Image (cartoon, rainbow, N blue to C red; front, side, top):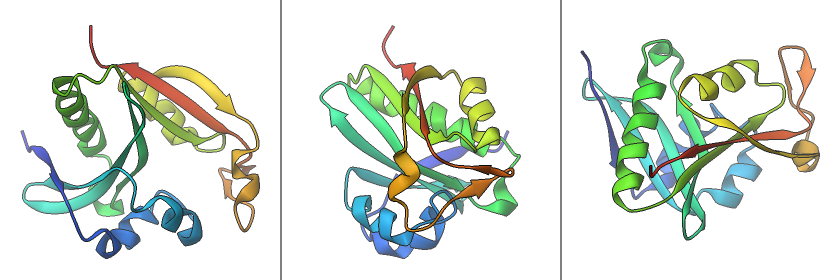
Length: 153
């Protein structure tokens, strides 16, 4: 089986093109790019994407942005990256992992449930402050759907 590893990066601006795969606004990304910890997702010793983790509270890790390159999608890389994150942050004694996605991101809504997340909250009008409307699957993104996954049993 091909393996996925997460490697922390320091020069975050080099990864803007990856971050834009998951968040359409460079202005919004610039608002959080220097928060938390940014990891490149390596698959078979090649860059396959990035994941940015932030820490909104002492017991919580948030996946702020996770992006897999188009050519690397559909190979289980995202699932393995989540499993790596669960391992890393469980060992650091965090209690839960959260992630948010747009109400219009039907694939993401399914993916997060498949990898063990459950619905946690809705952040109404989250996408209202984006510089232009975001549409996916013919649906306008208005709200952020937040998922939660426990890290410690």
